[in-house]
Length: 465
Image 1 (cartoon, rainbow, N blue to C red):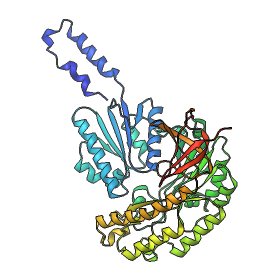
Image 2: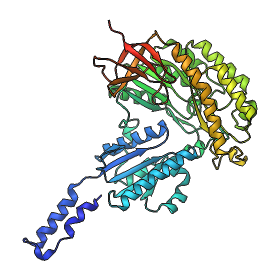
Image 3: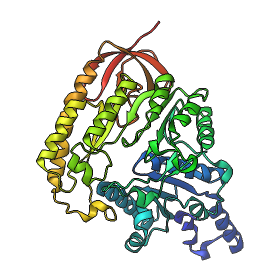
Image 4: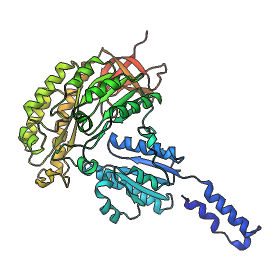
């Protein structure tokens, strides 16, 4: 692509030139061709989007195209915005980001703006009409088509290879795409399609490649982990996959995200208990605990079944960290439902909880219901739930004071080190604040004694010898 700044040589009074015009023209042509394209990828939304961006980066790099992620230097001339379309706030952020990039293009600071991801998959026709300045819109499964815009070839031999945008010691590993569930609030199947598993061989090969590049921790992600394998092996195969991944030399931690509670495959817990490098951590989104709301949400589980599953999980893996997410303000939710959810939190005492306010998404079955909880009330309910969890979180953290944990050092910031225990995932969970006069290598492990506890963080000191 030709940067607009390269045209400056055209705006010269030709009569003042002291050398032949053909030499001047030749000079301008060379000046234009000296500048290589530089592509900046901006990723919004979930970790699954981040993996998609890393795969795109890998393909561009293999085609000898300069690519960066979240470039702050602003020395690029092409932007790819990888959007999220999950809930209203995510859609608003995506649209605002697109408009920001289009504005840069209007002012001559960018040559091209491309948009991909879930928002583009879902609304590209409408968005194309509203924001015509975008050069092209691509869906979630159109990587080969997108590469054509860069005159680049899709290299099948790079399957699983990517350029990491995370620190080199951890990475997300997507084991499947899409979802077959029909939850009333969720638009993911509209944007990502039906569940498609990768083969065990593909995933293990990708994990080995990540470890070879320096990764010590992988976070397994999918819209629904426990469904893994049903489509290609005709049975749930997550336990088998975990065994194979656990055998990968150099892989220190494996972490599980997004496990649906209905028909939970308990055999994965046997593997978790037996294998040291599988973290005693499980992210199990529940969304609610009121039977009436669970039915309206089409969650396929009752409160009693959920409690039975939680108890079984804790019995099989004593000390496991359980994380869940909840939705506040789904259509028809009453104050009694909220009170029941608060009691549920107090009784179950989850280690980690996230709360979302309900977003009324067209195309979902929930959209046929009346969105009867005002936005301010949804937010109020979410805050009330988090207040309950905040107290539980502090109490659980306080119980760790005086204990020693294996901690991975993520970064150094403001003169202190920040790390995580096996019970904490990246960005969404607790951090361990470590003050140390000695250098702690980033990406390595240290034995840390917890000395102080906060609502959502811990503080500790290095144990030597």
